Length: 466
Ligand code: HEM
Picture 1 (cartoon, helix red, strand yellow):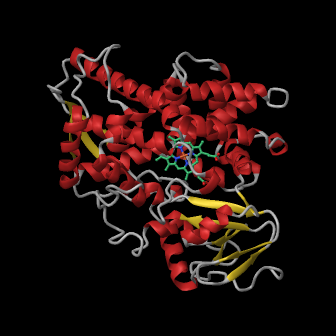
Picture 2: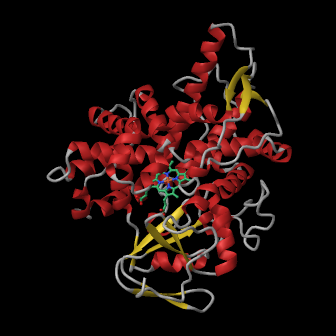
Picture 3: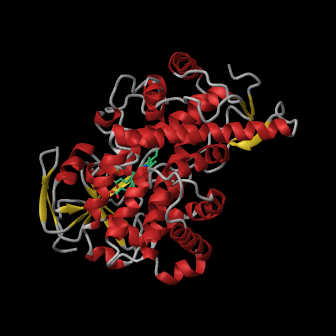
């Protein structure tokens, strides 16, 4: 376009007329962006059908953009596209600071998070004990159970996480709708005309609206987290303009955010850790020191389960999970320029951005930068040992700036608990140790993509958990 900054080149690599980089992106977006970064340097343009983006590959340059108030995070607009929010939210920006205050109070704060983690661990024990007891009743406790590692991760996380956050609700009813919507989630990012959704994604649209309705019907569940209660109270305080139907959509968005990336993160963490004998040895050793032995058979309401502090002490486990998330966590981060602006790049250039232009950063480029992460393609379980992942340059699987994922601390506790519980209470075998799945390509860029196919495993509960 004539008034755009001509010093920002259009990346010809992988581009076709009209659709731009869409096909190359569908095939392998990490490869395209790494190659464009190599050819065009610190700033270039790409096009995905009718959407155009200025890519900023360096995380240091991106951090300058995130701090610049001319570039806005368009969360509400994304919510309209993905979760069908009404445009009424655009006229009520006051909901945003209220929501972020609750994130700080409950999710980003050690004291606020504590009861939710404790509840999650308790629910996890409960789920495992129930499964073990029912297997024993059927006299099949010693039999190996065949499943897929992704399915296993889903089952491990779904109920304990949902009830820890939202209280005693019928998770089975939500589960089918979640699976349907989640499976096609990525299509809702593409601004197709409305008829495309109603025609091709009708089941998913129905699943999304069923989720919204079930939150409306479950507006005060027992044992909900303080976070959820306070959140509902905030919505209530805006009831003069916020209808119940929209509240259902807001909760659906949070519900998806709490699971959509965490289930694949559990899968990949188990996948990498369980297949790395050295990682396993270190993690088992620290678990023996820090996580007390609680028999699944004896656990009851008076049991003192693993505490967040005990889980915090498992440093190798923390490092291995951070490393897993480096390898598979590759969100696109977006900002919209709201007034003509300038920004300086690390290479000394100044670029001009016009109001309305979109900027994007992609974690996959930094996470595989050999200068930042030597032997970047390898899983090095102790890479993050004694490091605060948050301050490692270029490490941004949870985004950055104001819109950074508020659930990242809770997610880490969840993943650590899942891995530790499996190691403590189960025996497992991979059917094929050599098979390495790829990430589901259409999902890459939205956080953590699940594998393109499930990995067969067998498992059974240990006879004696002491
Ligand atoms: C490993 C698991 C997870 C990953 C990789 C992840 C990643 C992300 C990313 C990349 C974003 C967007 C950041 C941006 O655009 O700057 C995000 C946003 C968000 N995440 Fe997570 N997330 C995870 C788990 C969770 C959990 C467990 C929760 C809730 C308990 C959660 C709640 C949210 C919410 C509410 C937002 C939107 C924040 C806003 O509106 O500003 N996430 N997450």
